[in-house]
Image (tube, rainbow, N blue to C red; front, side, top):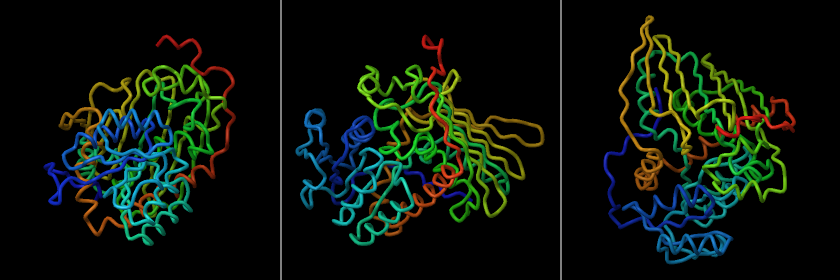
Amino acid sequence: MTSLPPAVSAVAVPPGGPIRVAVVGLGWAGREIWLPRLAAHPAFEVTALVDPQPAVREAARDTHAVPFAYADVDDLPAGAADLVVVAVPNHLHAAVAARLLRRGVPVFLEKPVCLSSAEAELLADAERAGGAVLLAGSAARWRADVRALADAAAELGPIRHVDVAWVRARGVPDAGGWFTRRDLSGGGALVDLGWHLLDTVLPLLGPATRITHAVGSVSADFVNDTAAHAVWRDPAGSVAAAGALRGDVEDTARGFLLTADGASVAVHACWASHEALDRTTITVQGAAGTATLRCTFGFSPNREPTPVLTRTRDGETVALPLPAEPIGAEYDRQLDALPGLLAAPASRGAAVAEAHRTIDIIERIYRTARPTEPEREHALAGQRDR
C-alpha cells in the first residue's frame, strides 16, 4: 500500500480569500519555480519577497507586482503572510524555517528539508513551540507518471526490490557556487537528486516500512569539469566563472537499502555522466510481476522525449497508459494541494517525520561511503561539442 498524495480535482480560491504568501530566497528555485507559479495561482497572493540582494528582490518585485520586499526574514512584519515559502540555500533551510515556525508562521520548505537529523529535530521543536505547520517541497511524488507507477505497483503483490536512478548527462548545478560546496549544500547529488528519489521510493514501500540497513558509495569525476555543468541552469556560465573554489561534493552516489520486511532498494543519483540524455528510471519488482517507469525528473531540456510505463508478467511486457502533462506540472499540482494541507490538522508533524526518515538514510549512506578526490582531468574531455 502506498502513501502518495491524493489527486486534487479542482483549483479553487480558499473561502477566506487567497492565501497571502511571502517568498524567502530568490535563487533559481525561488525565482524560476515558485514565484511565477504562486503569482499565477488563484489560491495565492504574493504579498512579500525576501532576499539579501537588492537588485534581485527589486527585479522580482517589479516583474510580479509584489507590494513589499525585505532584506532579511526577520524584517517580515508579523501578520504579513499566511504562509512563507522558503527557498534559500540548503545550509539555511532549517535555520530560516525554524525562526519562522517559532513565530507561529506556517512554512513551505523547499527540499532538502534538513541536512542532518539534528536539523530535523530543530524543525520539530520549532513547529511544536510556535504551533504552526511545516509543509515540505516533494515534487516528484506529485507527478502523474509516478502516481501511475504506484497504481501499477499496488497490483504486483509484496514488493521485493526497487531500482531507482536519476542520471544526468550534463547537469552539475551552479558549478562553482554553493551547490558544489559541502559546507553550504550538505552534499552533492545524493542530497540534491537523491532526496527526490527517496521521496518517490519510500511511499511505494509504505509509510510504516523501516529501513534497517543503508550503505553506499560516492564519486566525483565530473563535479569540476566545465563540460558537465548544467548550462540550462546558468546559460551565461556566470556562476562557474565567478566560483573561486573547486567543488568538494560528490557528483555521483549509489546506495543500497534493506527493509525490516526483507525488501531491498538500489539508489543511483548522478549529476553528470557519459550518457546522451538525462533519464529517471524506477523499476518495482513484486512477487507477481515488475513495473518500470522511464522518464526524466526536473527541468533539464536534455530529456527522455516521452515517459513510458511498462508492466511485465509471465514473460509478457505491456505498455500502460500515461496521461500527458507539461514539464513542471508536479509543482503546479503541489500548489493546488497546499491550501488543503495548510488547513489539515494531520499535516502538523508529518513533513518533519518524513524528512527525518529521509535524512537518516542519506546520513547513513554518507557514513559508509569512502570519500574520493575529484578528478583533476576533464572526465568529458572531447565531448564538449555534444
